[in-house]
Length: 202
Image 1 (cartoon, rainbow, N blue to C red):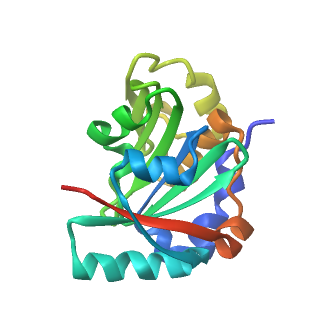
Image 2 (cartoon, rainbow, N blue to C red):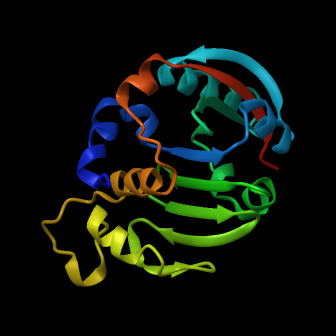
């Protein structure tokens, strides 16, 4: 059964510092080291739990704002990539070439509330949209997941109201799970020792 936005409401409640600005990416059949190599990154010291990851990311930002901190871990056939205050995962110029031969599913939010979801297959953008405004979609298959998106809880124009809670970020997590079969949990974010690296953003 497909998860819904309600299943991921814990993220903003339990990890508020990361929830302010992040990019989560799931990549099929690439190891963390392979992914880092494709992003032309360099290795950094491992960190345990996303609190340490967030701290390291902001330390790096202060010392060199041309670099993005990357935290990665294998999850079955997938690698999870977390970028605190980052966006490489949804930047088509970087993500699409890096998705060669694989499936790439990424979603992003920044501190200003700007958001984006990207599903790519072997360098092709299958679906992109802003989770807060799912009526506007682009890519080679913009409507393929429309029913799934409605079931998950994305708020389309005709369904919105002044009292509706914005669950777009939580819905993005649920849609990523639908496309990958990987469920992100609080325990995963809190207890994992992540392989870390950094990559240039410009």
